[in-house]
Length: 343
Length: 290
Image (cartoon, rainbow over all chains, first blue to last red; front, top):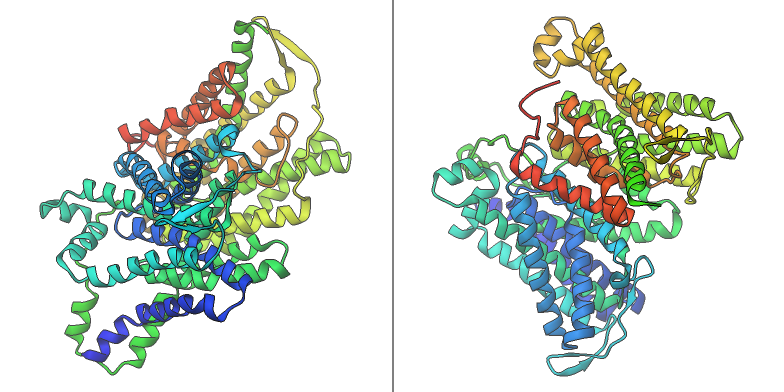
């Protein structure tokens, strides 16, 4: 029984090992690798946010990149107009994106027709890109805006760019989120959230307010993506309307799918596998989007459960045989039977 | 220009754009309704139609009408290949798998277009340079010709679905794939016809728009969000609903463009459609099928 528990969490174990590796990067790698890894950590939040809204909110959000961009611009304007304290900048950015996410969710979550919610997020993504490109006085257009401002971190002088403080400021919240997921998953709260994600009709019959929970999930996922954008602005110091490009959301879909939708550790693994691979490939291949496209098709058709699915399948086949009833009890969804309103 | 002639000009522009857009989204609606597939790569057929026409007409100096015919034929043939390699495997799969695969296909096709045609926008000279006066506004004759071709193409599709055996099969298969198989109808053949029709209409729309708006390798991606929202607001499987919403969207955009910048007009037209999705989650005409 013990070994089966470990095999069930094999993907999470791989993810934790990867987190330890990420924590060691500034000490064992050069400046360029640390810079690329820090940038990747900022983008990791979009993949985590996408996974959250898909698994628990049942919305594959194609506007998740817009919240990333909004978070980045929020930090820029808070720094320029309100405060240069990093904690205030990040909290402000979280608040702005959470409110924007909640407003979007009120619209999207109510779209109950098949595919309607996905279409709604696609439309919102398209609108935000158009808006960003038409408000060039504020967004800087494709040339963008550069953050040249002295900042403080809890009163201590810090600076924009990749350094020890900003690197860990990008890594620690993601680590805490992943650990919180592991700890909360078996609790009554975790079980209810999974139930809402799996079967809205039965959850409603059991007395849970599905709509409100989904709005909150979507708002939280927007805030997570926004935090990534905020960290991107702090790490890179330059933002442009290219951040509103649908490709940002599409890339996060690729990372989360390759890793395996259904667990934030899948999003982590997918981002850590694909992001550096694409970075390396972009040095050798000119048309790297073709590679991203081929990967998306291959993943979707050949292993739709992603790396997490492969790891778990391998771990289960390596584990000693278990009692059939135990296996069935573990694999059975909390609320079986789909409602049919797949989004 | 006075407001009234400008308003008439923009309204006519809106109707023409709406008809062109209707051709594009009809293909989306067909694959969505008949194959239950959200084909994100559909915009790439539109882009290829435009890029090929622009390359033939501007790059090689070919006659415009011949360029249109040639590019539409090439894109329709590509539709067959894409269907065989990817789309056909997605019929009956989870919506997410279809969405991801076709998103990958979009990136793949757009990357090949970038490699082959380059990143610069290609413009095509207007094949008919005359304008005629309509209620005080001088309107280009070419755009009226495009509107006529679009109406003929849309009417042709409806006639094909209503009066031919293939059309009957296309309407029958989504009702029951199993019963259709028993009756000797091949769902694979129906899917093939659906993709060919969709790619034909999208390529024709792309080819005809080149003298109005220049061709660019990312132009398929830009119409994606609007395309899907029109399909869903129109009622997903309701082709007439899709056409009505596409033209309505064009008119709203045209009227808005009289008073604000074109990008802002596009935002206004999209924002106007979003509440409709909340009020009618299955679309305005969702209750009736084509």
